[in-house]
Amino acid sequence: MADITQSNWAEADDDNNQPASDGAPEGMPLAGLNNTLRMVMGAIKRWFGWSIPKITTGTGTAYILSYPVPAAALIDGEARLVQFHTANGAPATLNGNSRGAKPLHYYANGAWGAIPANLLTAGMVGHVSYNQADGAYRIISTSRSWLDILTTRGDLLTRDASGYVRLPLGAAGKALVSNGTDIVWGGFDTGDVKIAYRSTEPAGSLFMNGKTIGNASSGATVRANADTEERFTHLWNEDATNTLLVIQTGAGAPTTRGLNAVADFAANKRMPLPDPEGCTFAVADNMGGGATARLGSGATGGFGGTVTLGKIGGEKSHQLTVAEMPAHRHSQVPGANGLGSSGDPAASAGGSLILGAPTDWTGGDGTHNNVQPTFVIHASIKL
Image (cartoon, rainbow, N blue to C red):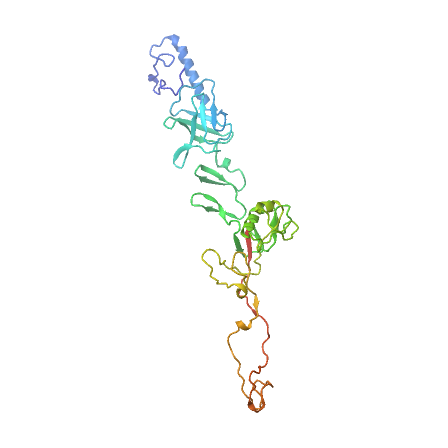
């Protein structure tokens, strides 16, 4: 038995002159003719079997091909059309008629290499060709297309180190960015603050209004949903002292923190969002560069100590204290009627003054506006 792939088959007709049944030599006896014809018909039929999809057996890391008539030894370049019965793992091999398991390779990034997991899917048809130099089956084409990769609304097609892959739709508010190697979903991260001229919350964000978040059973006042856990955890960790964002029970009463954020979230507790309503923003004074005291501290600056993340300070109006008034003095001079020019009766007659006597009261004893020119917009925080 010989197959078309064997060396005794020649492309030039006259070279197929080996003794029957491997050829048809000149003057071949009639007794050998039937054997040669049967061999040719069998070889053509086997070739046809290789060119139609053959379903594999085995596993996703060790595929097996079985044909009714075992093929001869592996020949460089011999090809098979294969239908893979299951998705592949990594690494994956193909064994045809017990001729030895050979790695499955594909071409990516300018070189042949082992296929990554799930490159092949159940039912996919692929053309494989044996490469003797690599000792591997090379996948030279498949029925897979970008339509197979993109399975859900919003999917994108991108390429990473393993080849073309599906990039699922990112979370609300995310944007496509480069991480220096691949295209990924990025943009706003959990805890990022967005300033916007809009009256509705951006997708994936919540207004910073002091209302609470928690799980679906928490009764949180702005969002009670499992998708708040990342934001809940972030805020829990940023205020470990439970002083600025005081955690609440499911009934909304202030309470103590549990073992960690995961435990408190599971316990149906509520976490308040930061509430900068009516405030301008300033940069914290404890970011590693040394305290600058640019915003002051204590009563003078309206902050009770270091200006740290989440603190609120300052005044919208202020009444000057004596210590804050500019250094000044008042003068009194005698008047023509014998009273001080201030008109105060404490001044003596005859144009003299009584030392230490006060002047008349003046001023409204009120506060002054402390608000800088301000343009009002909305602030939201990323979930």
